[in-house]
Length: 148
Image 1 (cartoon, rainbow, N blue to C red):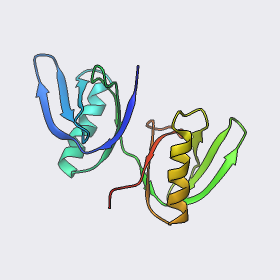
Image 2: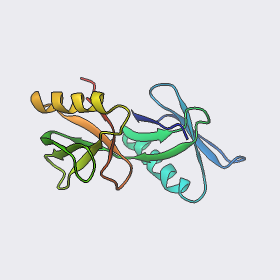
Image 3: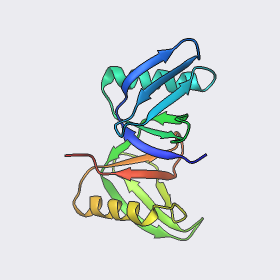
Image 4: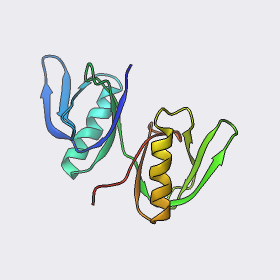
């Protein structure tokens, strides 16, 4: 699957009872759909709550099919420390102020240099950064500075 990550509000949420799907439009205009079965139910509940609360969420989807892989909250925090490491694999070890455990940006991430630059800039300017990971995981998938 060709996965795209996005920090987005849930726009135009709609349900299709015939196909048992729920869909929404991301801030970038992509239509994402969630199958209303199994794990999809958890994503649907989370997305509906995000709409009700007007929150930005972190999503991963296939841009070709619009199938949502996951929808999750993300870390909104200041950088405590950044450290280049070689073990257990090359990358950047990230410590956030409010998160007790480390996050990790793998050097194998195709956007490693860009994401690393964003993290260093956020630390230097003492600005909040948004950090997206797979739910319950510590590997950083995407990073963004919030819009002013």
